[in-house]
Length: 233
Image 1: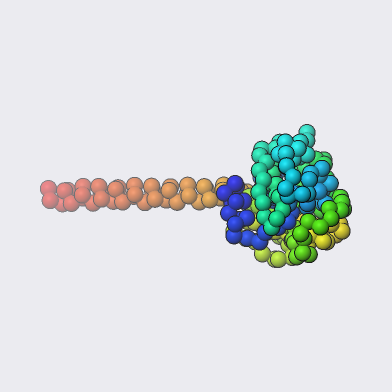
Image 2: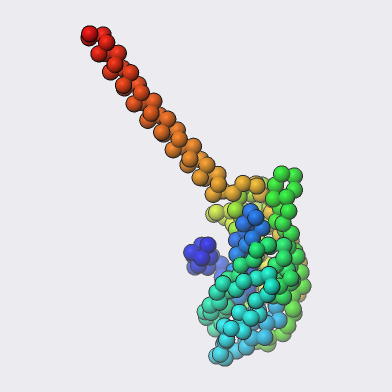
């Protein structure tokens, strides 16, 4: 997941704020937040300095994301376009509880079994709407909500209508719309069996077929050799 997230940031569009959910079939999840400091201040009301030359305390970021339902696995920082960025990895035992953590409280999360499928939904609502002054935004900045699914997707409502490699689906919104609180509605329905399970099952069946074929070949050779010996005698 770390490699996928890092590579995705290198080859894909750069976002001013991005939430990336790696969902498990059991409802657990790893959540990555990649955001500029001004975006975190404006959208989530974080008490962080927007001045790129000011000292950024990672412990403050860690405490901002720490909650009874989230475990902060890592916090790193970077710079881009004259702004400081933070990269946070969270672990949550039940995605349905993630909205009780203050930095993610703008979303309502649901995960349920419905008509033989697992349905994940998320509604992102109003932002903190905090002013940050002139931080170098041009108006072209984008926000993204990206979901990595563990099984075959049967339905999703992403405007892109596409599923990227490894069952990745993305919902995009302009930063200006997100600051104004325009809602983002995410709905995905997927199979109840993981892609990994199906792959391992297919691999196991293939190996079993190879073993049966090999055993049949040995049996055929042995029986033919015995038959030839009986004819000679």
